Amino acid sequence: MAILAAAIAYGASVAQQPVYRSTGLVLLNDPRTGGEVTSEFTLFFDPTRYIRNQVTVIQSTPVRAKTLEIMDSKGYPPESIVVNVTARVETDLDAMSVSSEGTDARQTEAMVDSTVEAYGFVISEQVQAAAEREVLKLQESATELEAEINALEEQLEENPDDAVLGAQLTAATQQLIDINSRIADLRTEALLYGSGVQLYLSPNAPGSQIAPRPVRNAAIAFILGALAAGAFAWWRAEQDQRADNKDIPAGVLDAPLLASVPDYSEVHAWAPAPTLTHPDSSASEAYHFALSSLSFVLEESGGRSGVVTSAGPDEGKTVTALNLAIAAMKDGRRPLLIDGDERARGLTQLADINEPLASTNGAIGVVYNWRITPDESIDFIPANRGLGADVSGYFRSVEFRRGLQEAMQDRDIVIIDAPPAMAAAETAELAGEADAVVLVVEKGVPLRKLADAKDRIDITGTPIVGYVYNKSDVSPDSYF
Image 1: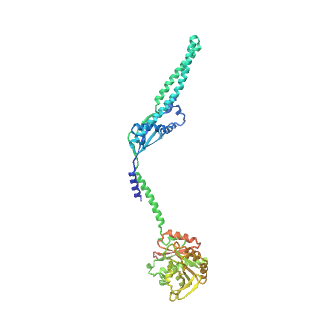
Image 2: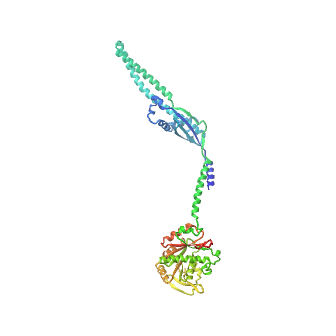
Image 3: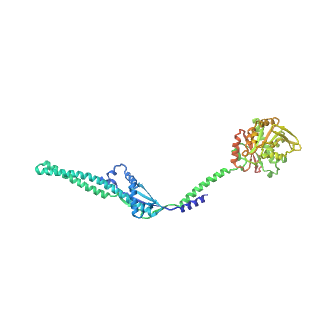
């Protein structure tokens, strides 16, 4: 995934149109050296404020309009300009940098030069205008002084010995000289300050390419792809965690291991009932161990019924229910085995009940005497109840609850083979009427299925007293 992401990023970058950047550096005059013509620019306390103001000015509408005029004169009509101009303060210098980005390298260079030229033109106009405003004020004062001097001279012609008039004439004449001198100084200052640009370092070359950068983009895509691949792999591993060990389901189900049943073929036992055909095998011993644990829990809670189910089909719940019932029979108890899986009817098919030798009618169905051996039998209620589509409704009914209570009156333990927890709604109904739930877990089942099954059963309020780990690896203590 990482390599593919890098390849796509590289290919996409190569296919993009190149973007170029040109940058020029503008070293500005200090406005405080410009005298009165720049007095309006010097009303600040932060020395860098002037530079920041000029960054705003160079990006203003008047400068932009003048820039387009200059570009047009260079052979770049406004409609052909596809670059943007930005400016920023250079903190180490009394300067600002001007940059232009676009798809035409030469146009970016021309745009920077034209922008700085336009900026200088606009600033020069502003300085000249400021100087002229001051000159006009001084010229008005000079005109008034000239009129005053003429009047004094006329008075002195009539009274040549009047010392006061002579002093006044001398002072007015000197004041007029000072004003004319100041007018000359203002025009000189404006001329010297000019555009306010002390030095301009032009790009001097077509813009350098800044995008795309295939190698950099491919490297970034590779890193992001690797991160995404790692996250995906982690998610897949999390989703695909399986019960590959008999102890793993305990953490998911929050229930203990009741027994670990080995694969029958590994211990040379026959299906479906090694408790009957191979009573000395480790498979048979595992079922006896599971029954002992279940019986202990039921005795503590005062109950007598247990539901055997699994998260999904084909995990061994039916043969587990059968072997638990046979183990109970072998212990001298009187068990009742119920096929509650109306869809698969696994126990009913194993019993091969067509015309039973002995049966009685119960509230929850016909109770058959399933003869396991010529001398041994188990009370069994098959799945052939003719319920049609309303299976879960029947197991939810008062009739079923009453019938189950009646069936338990003269039995030591009732074992119900229920459908897989995630496959049928009636499993929850059966679990809700029972005293305990045993979950059969086949080796390799996904843990998320176990978690879903636990959530479904927890809703009923009936506890999962433990689980039977099926088809486990053979070991001396595999059922402990």
